[in-house]
Length: 444
Image (cartoon, rainbow, N blue to C red; front, side):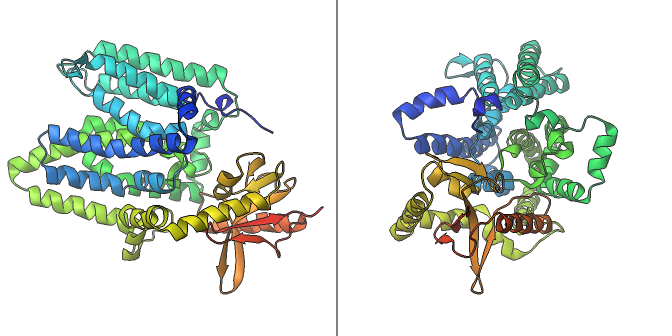
């Protein structure tokens, strides 16, 4: 049945966004905010490093390392848009402000004012945004207690307020079936049973390997690394079907990532100062280059590990270039995409119930009841599936699992077998190759 997304999480930011949508097209508003969140993190990281007297080349190399991290690159290229994704940029600004001396002013306004404003913004994104921001401030105040130049009590009070707001909203105002309520195991035996699951354990290992380059750099400033580890812990020991481990394009990565980048930036500036004094900067450049290469050659979705040079083709810069050719430069490709989207709209009558992969939701979001495939395939009138022609044979897929390729293949086979028993006409689909989608109808 239909439900309001505001009853699932405290997405209060959607109210001011709704005002913008009154003035500008919704796609322009949402995608602009989404892209700004990701790109501003990179730009701010660069200028923060430059303000710490890190050379332009070294600062650029650090930004390339962040850009190579799948949470950033996969999230920007293919990621889901949720208000949580704004925390990528807003959370990083908030954490950066928290570590700036209070006697500094930004646009002639005290830093404390901006810290409060960004804290409110982070809290409005999602209740977990409030919890994360509050925990960060409390941990930062405790670990940097003796640092001169900042008001620790102001940060403590703001941290307690943010944490309390997030906890109260989650505990008393949102439904008990919200995923974050059961995100963390509640008992040691519950955690042990998860760790003993080979799929869960392999997901943890891949998560740690992918985040290791930034975390190793963060360790040159151990206090910052400790904060990052604390905020990464929910993704390590929590469980939402594996998406929190290797779902790099999902919004579940949004809350730990700004803290990891912030901590790595703190460690990187300390490493740069140390290397400058000891005159070993070329070694640092070589090491960061090796970390970038290691991320690029690692397939972040596959376990056992898949490390090969060919994986570099799927990293951000080549993929961005190829996607820009399709969406920005090629009129033919754009026309094919638009015709395919219009074809899907014509293929599914208004008012129909559709079980659809995410790619089919955009053309059908008006005047249809959409379920996330394979949800509700027993009752849906139509299904929109990912499809591919391999050796003259049409293959269907689209069910998602984060437990590895073998489990995902099993899930797709089960879903298709169920569709056949439910009477879907899989032999006569309407195909839309430009989008890689197929529309199939269920018989009555």
